[in-house]
Image (cartoon, rainbow, N blue to C red):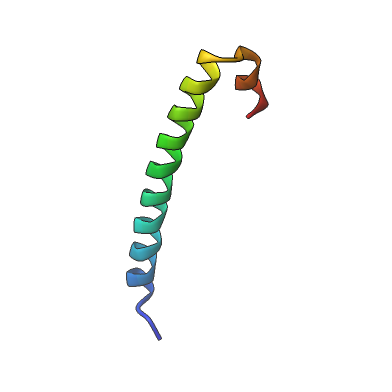
Length: 44
């Protein structure tokens, strides 16, 4: 069985990576939406 704290740290690392990528995607989407249709911001 894996060490509990070790698996939690791995999960945190994955969450950090996913959150970072998600943030970048949302920034790009935000820029795209603002350059195009402003009503798209509320569709999140």
